[in-house]
Image 1: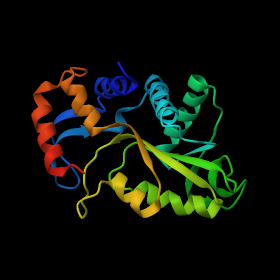
Image 2: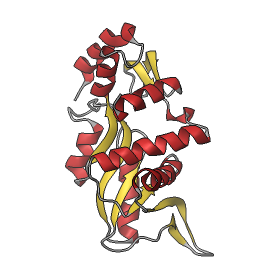
Image 3: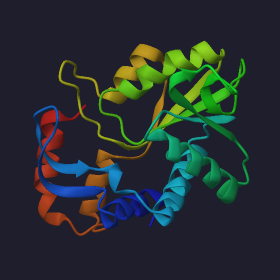
Image 4: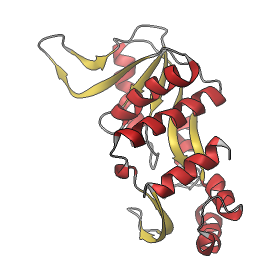
Length: 217
């Protein structure tokens, strides 16, 4: 199996990718649901870091520092940094933002690597629904230093248009900020994995394709 197929199987086996009928926050009835809150063990996190690291390496993304937006992005940035070192021998820094600026001790808005002008930064997140996490972290990054954001890495690109646009969240943030978003897998990859029997979910194939036909971007 490819690492993308392995990752899809990994999500299903760990209850992160589920199939059925789910009502999303948008009100849409979806045949699948992604709950990254089900990653909760050291073994899961170690494996997850390898997949994120492989995505960075596979896409040739230049990274000096990984930024994990608080809170979900924090463990993801840490495990991705470990994954890059263990799998590819690349030693990168990491940092994450505080919700409020600390005015005592070492101070500052970021914990970990203190950002510098010209530093190549990659943002690590779980999934992107509206681009809110990116919109919140960008001004914090630019306030800290004139960094170069070389990309954002997420686990799954839903490839789903927004409520007020024909563009997906990934397409919208690229259009608005010029930040390219990379994903370990896309919704098309998941559909293909069902078709190829990588995951035993053939009964959901028609509903997945129909949902993609209606809401796909």
